[in-house]
Image 1: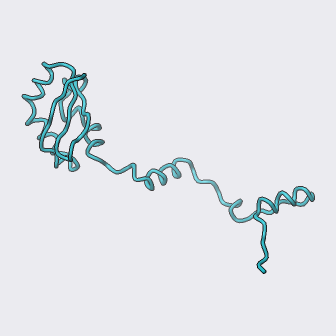
Image 2: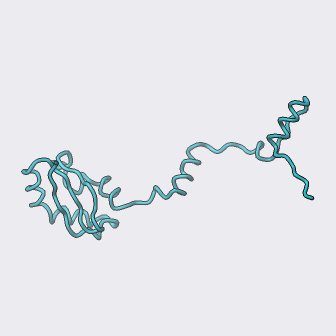
Image 3: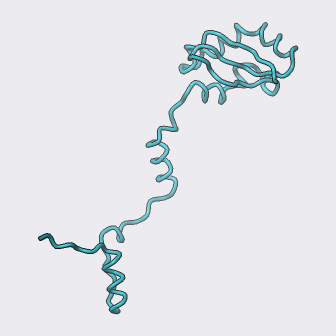
Length: 126
């Protein structure tokens, strides 16, 4: 027969009922970590700090398309790791982006995570 023992929580409940001091273990003596350290460790564990091509494009969008176009178009998604879809609601902006397509690709390739992108498609808002 094995002897079953109760957990600390139940032992402390019984101790409180009997007016005895609670049992404090090592875990109660540890100092709490700052929240920023815990969140940093959690993000690292979840691998959300990893730079993806989409994140690199979003962070550097003004450099990629230029300051004049940054508010008139935005990246939508990357298809099969080689085609970037850019949304613009104005046909004039799409044609201007089409003219600058090689320059946009050149700017994209300056970022290591975006080197695989070889084509850009411009779509209209529906």
